[in-house]
Length: 377
Image (cartoon, rainbow, N blue to C red; front, side, top):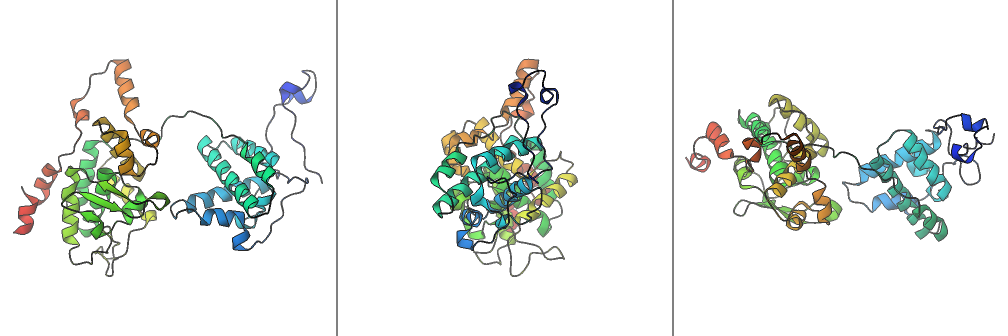
């Protein structure tokens, strides 16, 4: 049975025609046919000849899960779930018309423009690999490349974890002096105090942190890029205490090791996983009675407060691993609050102007007036 042709746009039809009286809706329950009008057939290509595997295999480990999930979304949308394995989908058979239909289908599902554009990025990449592997023509690739991204302006996601909130989190972590609490306080210090990404923070080793200069050697940055990151002085006290607790481990041991079922550091130590980070943040947020936030909000908070303090965006972009300072500015969450206060003529709360958390006060409550002196005793 031939697939049903999509109705023409209503603006091109006569106002009296029956088709014009019916609202146009993309049929998301029917498969999108290939160029010859037939459903896509699953295939099996060698790993070095499969456009999807060649493209995803060339990405860094942090990006691979995201693109794998996007590939599943594309295949599920085009075949309505008939083909389960995206590696068996004939990516070389995609055409300009099919990609346009795919974009319409994804919009009909109500997906965010960012999600749709990520899918289009994957389609363009696999089209290029198909051409480079000799599975499709350059003309096909050029035409697919002409399918534009969706343009939209949306409110920024995420929020700033305020100074008093991060202080509550650190207090909750360190109050009982457990291995778990101190390790997780170290995670907050790396994310909020140095602006690391989640994966970068989980892979930091003891030898990567220089206590004298407050510098972190980020060896596993995005796209395999290494860089130097710098810890805010207020957070150094937590990392120094964590290092003392881990002093019996080798220099190449993780700074944030996994815990045994009894809650102690494992021997031999292993890095915490990025999958456990979300649970870590949720657990301490509830204990500290802090409004919900994501691990990435800690990085947003670091960048926002550094920009508020007048740090040059170019220098900040290098420190947080952004190739373009414009990307760094996308993390700025100052605008909404400042605009609201200006338009509503609200008084400025002096506590919101504090740019540094005084963890010396936190340390006094936990470990005595001077942490270093107490450790020496």
